[in-house]
Image (spheres, rainbow, N blue to C red):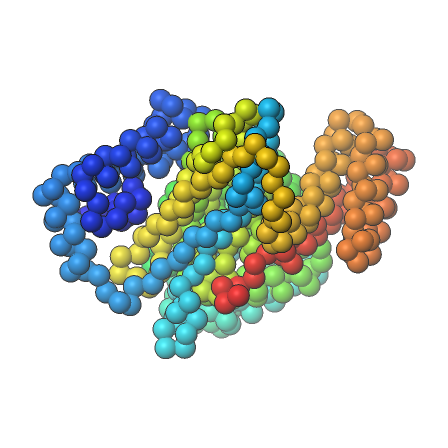
Length: 498
């Protein structure tokens, strides 16, 4: 018998639960998660399958006994775990006639033993670089890229796997997937890159994913880093479909945009679908710093292929999922899961979730959402583990005067800055110059209050530009977008030791 998750945890019952307890737990979850009653939430459908499987196992005495015996035999003290902690902005809600918004902060923490000297193990990388070498990369950009790639090779171990694909309007594999043993030879191949041609990302990305599949394995950090400085033409949908496929296979993709002439929404979506990160690199020297830091973090992985399923109750809507840490960015739900990528040994993952609750809620306790975190703990023999948190809040006819958690308030304050620049962009696209200018000026005022003088100056500069040209500059828009994202890091909960 091979049951991937703990059926007791899935149903929320104790090890000694009687059949009546198991049936009651199943009925309660079925009322909330069954596709017939919760049709619009893909997370509910995903979770209901696990709930049904767990119920069928535990309600059968022979299967349950066999599972319990097998679990006792294979349980070892050295298995590591991650934990899921969910904090609501308020545990008591005021009953209102109209719909209202509430927030949850979901945090994933690695096992504290992961950073202990005697147990710490570096993750093995299966890393693929997909590098733009089109004409626009000529000169300093390409030279800095080569330096960054050389340093990356130097910091990889002989048990790591590297592949390198370069692309313009075609793609070429210059380093097929191989163990990093002959470092001078690998760096020599990278040094031979020359700038030429246009930019078509799909050719490079598809070959990159193909190379990563060569050694794709459950005990590896399977990751693709895409770097480009230009727009791609006519192949965006194929790239996004490829990203979805890669995510299902356990491959994450981080997307880096260099300079100002690239599609940030497109690269954001590629990263979000796979649990990777997207980043704006303003200058060629930033390539070296980013790649060094990024690969160090990958090598410090505790759990891979981490994802979150959010099953709201039928009358509740998930309106927003935003990763606060370690790499702030909006998240997408694909096939019932939100991809979170890698959980590092020394840092937590923090995700802010926004829900719309219905009006006319009756006083009393009510369930809101069931959160399910799944990931592969790299060093465990039985890698895949699951954590569940079922959120229940109190609805009261009286106003709630409890102080919200400061970490959520600070995160929301910083997220407001990010949303202001988004709303300004939307107003520009709608042709509403007055509204775009007002939002940018408001953003500048708030940034000044935080002591972000340079960023505030950028916001005011863009406000003036919009007033005169009816448009934002590519540089200014990307700077405001990614720098207001980075401000969220100061409101995150920090590393797992805190």
